[in-house]
Image (cartoon, one colour):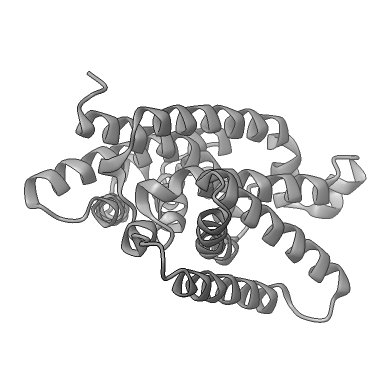
Amino acid sequence: MFDDFFVRAVLAGIGIALVAGPLGCFVVWRRMAYFGDTMAHSALLGVALSTAFEIDLMLGVFAVAALVAVALVLLERRGALSTDALLGILSHSTLALGLVIIAFMTWMRIDLMGFLFGDILAVSRVDLLAIFGGGVVVLAGLALLWRSLLAATVSAELAEAEGLRPERSRFLFMLLMAVVIAIAMKIVGILLITALLIIPAATARRFASTPEMMALLAAFVGAVASTGGLFASLNFDTPSGPSIVVAALVLFLASLLPVPAFAGRSFESAGKTTP
């Protein structure tokens, strides 16, 4: 069964969706989409350094993304520039550095398009183990941080007063993002990872009555988009990574249609304190 490349691709897409959905909820709630882009762009630098020093690709991407998170925290503490400006500098500089390093490695052929837009159909059984193993780690970490992250999303001062250490939780959340980007890069590519984090969460937002339900719905929407996008790619001979994102977009647009049964039932419109 697992020798079928398409079956492996479907399993890989579902595995990433189950992790990206809940994580993406906090990206949406905390307005961290630009941070997600920055982490994703830094992945290309991780690819370049991993290739140059002949180390594991996922490990190299995670290491660079984690260093970007550390750099952001340290630069924020200096207070010289706004967070948006720092993210812009880190995002474009790491992407450019990665491209320059790859250009210098003339002795090695690198599938740049595959890294930028993903190659889910080339996922191996080893990749599946990494995806599901890393996914379990990320979901376990998110479960441990859930209360602190949720409280800090509502009010950082309140979370601090309750001893939940929101700054530490935020940094650990960044590391979880780095893990997801490292394992998702092969699925949808560097340029489309953020879409897989944001679109399913944004789709689920309207129909969720609690934050926990939104996380579950986001995972489900991501899994449906991944599977639907792969079947569309197979039938219409379109690129698999972009097809997954387009499928997620279709689901998001469908969620905007008026559905009386769900009107006013989201946890935001119910008058509760929400992220």
